Amino acid sequence: MPAEVRIRKIAIAAIVASAIVAAVPFFVSSRVTEGVTLLKRAADRQNLYIDLLSMLRDVETSQRGFVLSGREAFLDPYNVALVQIPVLKRNLIKGAIDAEEREALDQIIPLTDEKLVNAAEGIAARRNHDATADSAVGSTSLGKVQMDKLRQLLGQQISAMADRRNNVRGTLIEGSAQVAYFSGLAAVINTFLLGTAVFGGRRLLRERAKVADQLRAAVTLADTRNQLMSGSARMLQAIQSAPTVGDTSAILTTCLTGLLPGVSGTLYLYRNSPDVLEPLASWGSADAAAVPIPREDCWALRFGRAHDHCCDHDLRCNHLRSETRTQHLCLPMVTQGAVIGMMSVRFDSLSTEQFATQRELVMALAEQVSLALSNVQLREALRAQSIIDPLTDLYNRRFLEETLKRELARSTRNKSSLSVIMFDVDHFKHLNDTYGHDAGDTVLKAVAAAAKGAVRKADIVCRYGGEEMIVVMPDCAEGMAMERAEMIRRAIESMRTAHGGRDMPQVTASFGVASHPVFGVDGDSLVRAADAALYVAKRRGRNNVQLAVEG
Ligand SMILES: Nc1nc2c(ncn2[C@@H]2O[C@H](COP(=O)(O)OP(=O)(O)OP(=O)(O)O)[C@@H](O)[C@H]2O)c(=O)[nH]1
Image 1 (cartoon, rainbow, N blue to C red):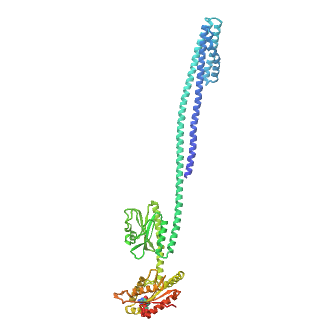
Image 2 (cartoon, rainbow, N blue to C red; image 1 turned 30 degrees about the vertical axis):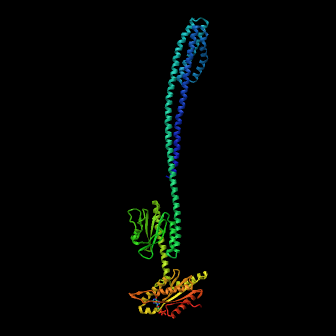
Image 3 (cartoon, rainbow, N blue to C red; image 1 turned 60 degrees about the vertical axis):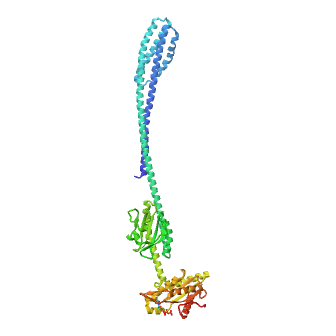
């Protein structure tokens, strides 16, 4: 039964029961009221009988005093009684309580009248004769007999009224006890019903508050999930658009801090070695200067599955040895069956419920981030393959052409200079023919490395084709380019190589230098000018640097 219906039923029962219980004392108390009226009536009647008796005594005493003394003053109480007794009689007759009393009154009233007549006769006789007149004395004697009878009858009524009062008083005490009992009972029952209704109401309110809390929590959870979904979608989109894996570092730090409140961590990737994890990004309160960690330092990578560090009994990874007792999770980052890295996560002061939710979220995010990062890695690799010459590790000709075009445009825009150095290994055919093609390859690699080592970071060293190489030097005028070419020449001349356990002979190279805009305004004309200068260098005995001729 729904709680509301239950409460409504209890409330109706409480109202009905209170009405019934309240009516009981009312009925009981009406009986008490009736008893009080009876009590008062019995008391009034008792007083009437007492008064009548008292008046009759006055009549008796007055009469006797007057008969004996003949003094009128003795008749004062008699005269008062003559006025009062008729009133008393009327009241007694009018208010007779029951047949029994009426029967008694039937004796008392006539006897009272007779007594008054007797007294009047005695008094009259005394007035007419002297004090010793027989009639006066005789009436006094009769009066005494009458008085004795009246005293007896009135005494009986006074006692009867006293008994009646006692009975009514007993009934009243009993009624009061009943009123007290029922009032107490009513109070107890009402308190119980009221308590039940209040308790039920409170329970209902609590249940309602609980449901409201659950609803609020569900809405908050849905909001949080929506925010998470849109936040993680934004992060993944940003990762996908990053040109290199290195560029995803800042994206991960920013986005993961926002997406995972109360969670800190570091994301590691295998980059240059399959045995060493290199930190890519840290977020939250994790150490931003995380260091590379050997693969075997992490149990998650050894087991190939998520590894929790929740209590002292969990195996603790070496890379977490300095961490105190917070909850940790190490998570291999797997994509298409291959482990590309590891996420080490710390949960800062989360409740058990929050921990479970955040852990689930971290697992889901790690999976998505793994996929996105592996896409970036793949794209980076493909891109590198398409622009990097696999033998010398220099940029290839395609990249050179693109770069030259872009750099020339920038140079024109900025009105800055740009130089191109073209160089070619001398007598390379002879070296190939003498030591073999593989030995030639070794020398080419060494020449490329020497050239790269002799130029600035901003300069772009490319393999133009065969044993020909070009260096594009942005913001570099011809004088500086000549110097730089000379440095490369000396670096090649002084390098020592070996192949197949045999020392290779010293190699040299010839150089042609051309600068923009003096020797050419576009890439082709600039390269042609450098090539022409290189040709001059070859003709002038090789192993030298020549500046292009203004054309
Ligand atoms: N080992 C090797 N040889 C290459 C490669 N590319 C081109 N060559 C060779 O480089 C040689 C270039 O020879 P040439 O153009 O005659 O020039 P050279 O022998 O260096 O003579 P000069 O340039 O006049 O000093 C050819 O024998 C090519 O086969 C390469 O990738 N590896």
